Structures are given as C-alpha cells and as structure tokens.
Length: 96
Image 1 (cartoon, rainbow, N blue to C red):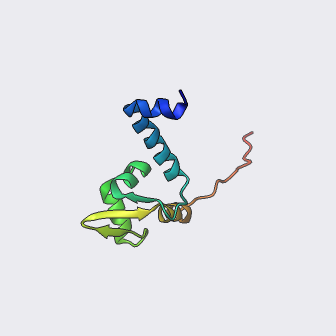
Image 2 (cartoon, rainbow, N blue to C red; image 1 turned 180 degrees about the horizontal axis):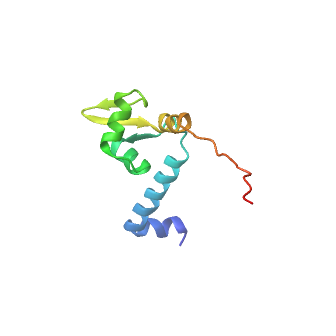
Image 3 (cartoon, helix red, strand yellow; image 1 turned 90 degrees about the horizontal axis):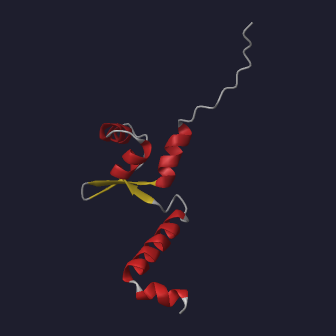
C-alpha cells in the first residue's frame, strides 16, 4: 500500500496532512500577501487592544476595515517594527 493510499484510508490523517500543507503554503507567502487580523496582531506583539487602536489613530500602521473587523498586511507590521528599530549599542566601558 502506497503512502498516499494509507493517508486517504484514514480521514483524520488526511485532514491533518491537508492542514499541514496549508500552513506550509501560508508560511511561504511573501509578507505583502499575508493578512492578519487585529486579534492576531495583538497576540503576536503582546500588546493591548487600545495600543493597536492608538497606532491606527496616529497613522503608525496601515489597515483595512471590513464589516467592523480590522486587517493588516504583515509587510506593514514589519515596516512599523523596522521604523521603530533601535540599533544595538556596543559599549567598551571598562570599570577599574
């Protein structure tokens, strides 16, 4: 029995394989094509609902609103993070 036949013979296994394939395809998409909602962004960045609302009000991040739900492009989120990047400072301070 081939592996494909084995997978098809077990519905739960076939569902799991399809889910894994979908996740892999999502991970391979460029950031411009990945859309996340406000809840996912808050969970990803560990910030509050008020924080993301504040970023939108101040024009820090581009967003879309469809039917009361807020969406962002991953590329816009990465741009926001990059714009607020603080470079590492290497100090050579010697204490005597």
